[in-house]
Image (cartoon, rainbow, N blue to C red; front, top):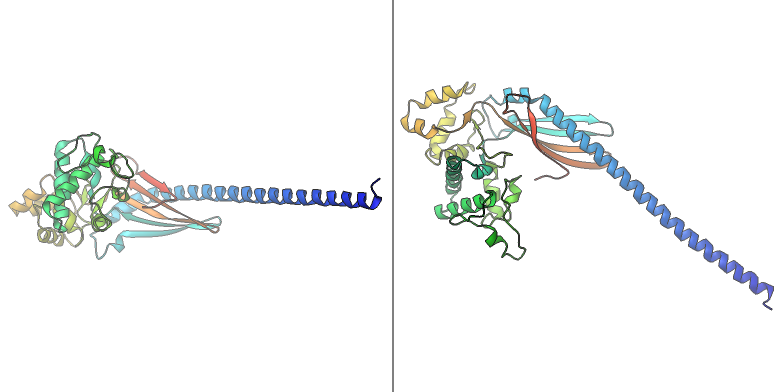
Length: 324
């Protein structure tokens, strides 16, 4: 017979083991509930931040007419006067929104336009920009061919270009995108488009959600924009001639494209250089970016507004939680 004291000790030990097991289980359950609760809170905050970003878009759309009127004013200085910052309060935080007209730029996606003449003109424009930045002509032409092959839908490789056959042989093989760029960061995988080159062309290029060249707002031109204006003519206008045209703008801005053409009519070479160049005297695309600050979290957002159509302005591109 087992002594009573030993039976009591064994029973106590069993009880202690059960209590310890239940304590561990309770701790696990508590931690799981805490994680699930925190995940649900984070998800709820992210959802609220996403809707707040949409509110920022609504504010931009409501301001579209005002932004368009402001875009008719001549650019001055570094363009800071063309940026509008809004701080919008929301429950538990705020929205910080920066609105600005898209600066004059070369739309790289126009290299994939269905119209061969537009493709050729944009190819000439991008090549001229690279040439102006000191890149040897043959290298510039190869870079443009590489980018065109990356964008166009066919698998036919252009002279100096690169298609699937090149990309699939790399260590981390992949295929050409064969679709328009969503942003300039997508140039990173392309051979020759080094970080230095991408930084150099960033102020003068863009990736619009269409394959037409950007209609240049001649009132938004500043000293740096002369690179875009010169390149858009395929180099027919030199950098100094482009700056001369920009300096000739009236103090109150050009009133119409006809006024620009009338000025150019006094110079046959200028008139020829501007022939066929898509021009305007007001902005068409406006970008918005900022952050939703909610409780202890912060979520970045970006979007683009187009006022090109005769109807209401519309959002043509958006991203939430990522930038670049």
